[in-house]
Length: 446
Image (cartoon, rainbow, N blue to C red; front, side, top):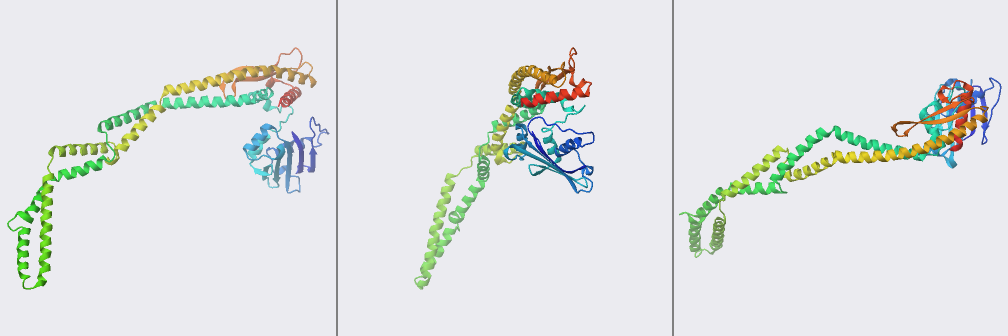
């Protein structure tokens, strides 16, 4: 509801403040008195186009402020845009300076002109001869019928159900479109899994296998080296132990003449004992070691298989176990995502929910249309159209977010005349009164 209108420096108006009481307000005056200026000012405050010409001559800027009591629908819009005021109030303000630049404000906050215009469409509807374009649109007529019948909540629920249905439909269609490529990807993943199932790479296997392979491949050299060390230290004619023993005996003899040689002889004796122990350890190493040609061949084949798989799948050999597990996961996920049967089931269930909701809403609309027809007809007759008749006629429509109904407002201005589409009513005066009657009835219902 419009509560007040404040006008400053607009066209020919210097300063004007108007307060509006609840109910019906009439402004009268002779032609040229400025009645239309008030309407233009209100529309400017709600986002209509304005340039420098609207600024009163000699003034720096024009300023229009309109105060409303916001409806529930408008309150929701304000909250969604973080522009809610106190106590359900709404203050729309617009300024236009002498250069044509304008600024828009809602409840004291600067907003874009598009936001102000969007809000204004829900606040004011201007009625004049042949100026009822909003009432001539089928979508607007359906909105009025739903508002009159208190069906907005049902309509929102239906729109949500329609969105879920269409979302499920898109998912199914995308899955069908991608079915060929998805099938190829599934086949590739399945091939990888089959190959790795046979190989069965284990965590840490590559390091263990290559380490053992290196040891076995050098086993002959290790044995030969150990035996050569024993020969050099003990078994050769001039072995290290033989020569060390000879030196030790000679120094022991010399110690009888000079005791300072004795510690040196003891060091050599210690060295001889340690070499004896080294020779014994080498002998034990040779006893425990053997060259297992079959094990070497087995390990050699395993390392070659792991290396070949790594090249085939473009992965590091040590990561083959991770590749195996991740490929299995991808295959399971892709198989689930492309289960067309399941997607069709989801789509069918969503479609059924939508159809049931649409049918329920359609029945309610039929009842609301009958009631609205009676009330608008009565209002038309109160507006000097005693033979006037109004009918809201429903027709089937392709399923959509608003349902399966198309409504058309039919009117006749005189008794005995069949109702025709509101858009085809010839008389401008009749059209104005009919539109006013519809708006009044719709507004009283909300």
